[in-house]
Amino acid sequence: MTEYALDELMVVEASRHIEDGNIVMVGTGLPMVASLFALKSHAPNMCYVVETGPVAPEVIPTPTSVSDPRVMYRAVRFGSLLDALGGVLQRGLADVAFLGGAQIDQFANVNSTVIGDYDRPKVRFPGSGGANDLASHAKKILIITRHEKRRFPERCDFITSPGYIDGPQGRKNAGLPQPYPDISVITDLTVMSIDKSKGRLRVDKLMPGVSLDQVRENTLFEPLVAPEVVTVDPPTRAELRILRDEVDPDGTYLKGRE
Amino acid sequence: MGKPIGGKIMTAKEAVESLVFDGATVGMGGQSIGRCSMALAHEIVRQGKKDLTLVGCNLALSTDIMVGAGLVKRTECGTGNLERFGTAFRWREAAEQGRLEVDDYSHLAMASRFLAGSLGLPFMPTKSMLGSDLLNKKSFDGVKPFEMLDNPWNPGEPVVLLPACTPDVSIVHVQKADEMGNVIIEGFTTHEPEMIKASKSVIVSCEEIVSSDEVRRNPDRTTVPYIFVDAVVEQPWGAYPTSTYRYYEHDADHLSRYQAVARSGGEAYEEYLQESIYGCETFADHLEKVTSTERLDELRRSMHRLL
Image 1 (cartoon, each protein chain N blue to C red):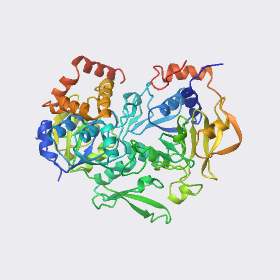
Image 2 (cartoon, each protein chain N blue to C red):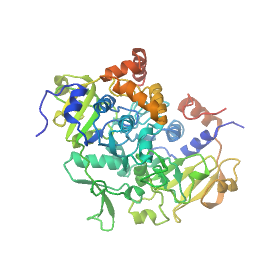
Image 3 (cartoon, rainbow over the protein chains, first blue to last red):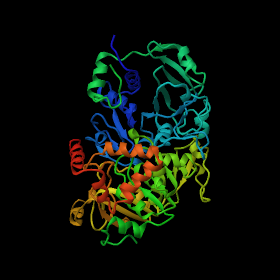
Image 4 (cartoon, chains in turn yellow, brown):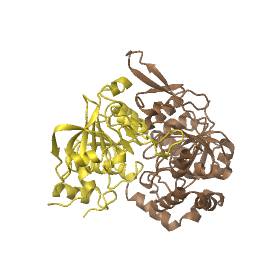
């Protein structure tokens, strides 16, 4: 059996949610790794858009910032933040966007602002950045995170980026633009996706060797469960080679692998 | 009437003395670890301009230093982070201890507020922020933070209206400018074109002064024309330790060193400010103190390999 690290499993699974030709809004970190992997494997015509402005760069491994020259390499245009988040994203052209956050709740709302009271927070996080915009306008939202219990509360302390807010009508009541997005949360234990009819996260897949009980034990809310829960395919030898040799050769993001 | 032609080249000291004042709203250029307006931020710290409101998108290193020096009353922004290098720690601690008013927006919301300002409009609509707690805002200084509008052409559809953001002065570090004040930004431009045009006054520091003849021969390269700009400061390495596209990469070592003292705060941080800002007369002094010609050459070569 091929050995792989959990982060490698997560990014390869996340990349499978990207289709060839998609316009993908990308930042840095594991989302960047997943997007770059998609670009170099099954989605060569993916269009990478960076929030600072660059469109369709060829991306030199491995960028560490949205202002990194590696995400500007051979771009077809250097635009502005308004071009990227306004002219592409709010305009409705972004197929996929990635989010990250300190808390993700049962409605797939994400908190990256504060724990505790807003005016006198227990912990202050960096804030929305472009995340709220991505969650408001992209057609598909992907969240890659380690599965820790405290990250999955019933309700976020603060909704920075809206999921389905409080249920199936949440986005409609808030006046968010249609179509309402698919949302998938990819963790080291499971892949949970939004059940649009209920507006709540549902366990669709389990990572290899993980049980449903493990997911429940590590989640503060009670997730829905798909009628047929499938196991995620582990990364193949060929996928791992691309990931390790072409996407993150220096182990900037994917550390601790064999 | 726009700004005059010429007479704009000055030192950082002169520019900050004449254009930045206590209580000003300051537009912050740069994004994350790219093109932060470090030389101008240092000068503001040295001159102790206080009670500032800082506005921008990703308020990163330049903001953290101004907050760390105790000069900032409020920030209005999308985020405060240095990506892989972590949060803006001085900003974060000030927010957690209630010493700083923080007004959160999304990045598109801030860019839209600058766009309104740049077009001379009182507000701009957006479809971001709906359904999020970013709309659970209180008002600062009695200014209504947003308004909801029922789309007149599609009744029942809510739209968020955001007030224009018009900084008293913006500080931006760019690649090139000329003596007229024409600005050339290379690479990403983030929120800067709209912010510059929305500002009542603008200080630009640049890697290189180019001739106005060169600008006139290639006008398609001008990001912002001189009529918006008040002061041009020639300051090579003016974004160090953040990067400037086509000129140099960010200095990961120095960023890590800064983040370590910013995280611990207290005396270690005071020492950093003393040593590397208050104890320097100019930004060139700062560079001499904290880095070396060899290291800077390395950062320049490293950028050139990526072009």
